[in-house]
Length: 156
Length: 404
Image (cartoon, rainbow over all chains, first blue to last red; front, side, top):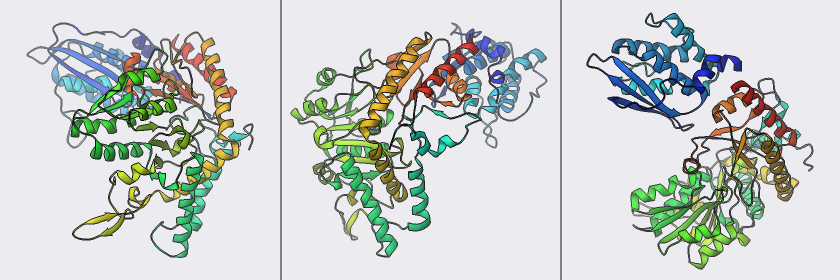
């Protein structure tokens, strides 16, 4: 295990100065992610238009560097993304955090991939995986995605 | 037994944890086990195993004697009047549930009040919450002050003529506050209110004397006392155990079972339904003997010295903020570190083999009052040393460096 891999520069930066932090006024969808084990909370706010495009996104919450950085990176990435793409990226990220060695989705640009992959260090710290995924689960519920009956790790 | 080489009695310290010597600072969560306790479990299962209190063959009789012998050891250890005042449970949580359930069933009605404190662990709040749901009982919380203490005066202020039971912690697992439980009990009894003490953190660290303390119920967690998991103890005054209804039904707790009705067994069987955690009970006898060999007074002295040392070390570290400054403090050091979330602290410390706990420590009411979602906590046991606390401080400096 290597702490440097877990606490990469990108994570420390986003953890200390999270982007898109704070509720904005005209959101029309929101959901809270909660980790009962540690009490961490991440609340995601969305402005979705008729085409199910995320016009604006932000989050509020408190938690460790990993959960804050993950929420921050997620909100940057998801802005202006449309519904099926959001789901694809979300599932791809969750798959990567839990098992896959890489991100497979073509929808994620190379520089975005680098940022997301900076969170992959949690794989070596099973107790911290939830920290990296808490915001993403909140986004899934704000988007009204349901869990796949045959694969509880996947949203449909 | 001397405290100097006490680590040698605990086999876990012989092993490297991720290539590091283990610095175990999570004893308020659960303590490590001495070799004698581990051996006792092994020996019981390999040479002496039988269920207890039922069959009349040789092994059954011998096992029953061993099992009952622990009851006597516990009775003596906490100076209870009668061995039948000791009830084995699956944990302190079950001990409190037993009281909340049976006492609630028999004596509580709508509008009655249960008085707790803001310091309580979830296990001394959630069991009472069910009575709120089922009976309309009101739960009050005596306030914690800025030192992390709950005073006798605050308890007194919260008592009304509706207060039917007071359930309080002996020693807070977050602020370390040792409550004036003897005085609180005296006050409560002057108003005919029984008292339950959650002794999870008290029993492993403080000398106990039930007849002196005079409380009605005292809950103990055995795995925090160098004993096995899956075992707790409820001490209750005999009159309560006789008056209260049984908790769980099953084999072993009955006198006579007929289609038309059932009569229940004598104490302590009345509250020990089904096959109990036999090996754990027998091994817990060794935990008590282990503590007795060192002397609980010596353990308390050692841990108090270490607590003072730990506070000194952490106070010198400018980025650390200690949580709780109670008048009388047990061996718990809760803290925050500027700019680093407790979970990140715990992960970074873990890389050095320093095991602490981070989170709300099952005390969300208390953390809400502190305005914190989480804290980091180093808690001590008999095996800890000043070097452990120095290592804690050194690893905290490493956290600061990573997050600087």
